[in-house]
Image (cartoon, rainbow, N blue to C red; front, side, top):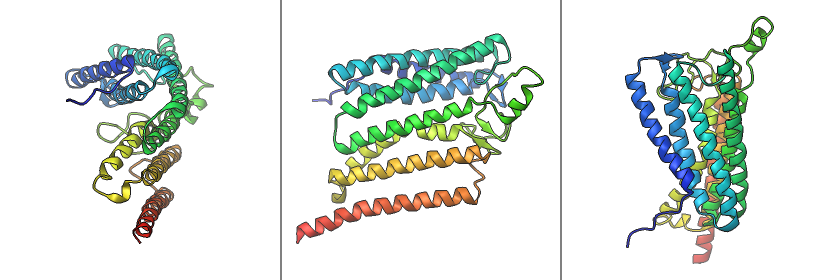
Length: 316
């Protein structure tokens, strides 16, 4: 007998498939369309956003699909809101690519400004709907304790990561200084201390010269996938390692993982706001990362040591 397919929230699952198709189209566009924007192939942004939405909506499709009864209906309606917001946002991004224009932060013309306003509304809709789905899942998600905690922590960190996006919508110091002399063409930026479009890391294009808020946004947002995967990995490892078999041990280790991804999100946000590139950390950043790593190692060691001590005591 084959394995039973997991129940999914169908609109979110369909959205994930559609975004996968759009990512393929954008990838082709990156090869076939020779236009560039801010130093990158013009189809780079649709590719990255579509890929991120595949992961985001696919994860929510599974989580919402596990609910039953009234919680399923409430979360399902919120899932439909996310579907609508996702398609609207991607329609604007792709439409601006077709026009050869920037989508984010662009207020150069009345149409550009209106489209950026639409995107701002969809971003807010996504955050609110995700937060409300999080409330439903916090109260009603079922499973073993490590998995439940992974989902709860993952949603909370993901919301924090999404909230970093709101920092990008604030005008930079240079933009505010220019408001008095000319109408703005851009309001907001993901870069801090440098202009957008400079040298960046391959594929993700995170700035190698200044601060970049997209890093913390990305890390925090995908805690929703990372922590449940950690819980799954610990459950698999428990088949070979007896120390991991008690649920309370795996729960504590999931908590350590949640603290880790929260700390990395906080450090990379702080680093970006200081205008510091991810590849040029200063002593403060290194010290913060070192303290975080030491704390995580200590937390993991304590969790495993307690289990070993209890096992030895029981054997006696």
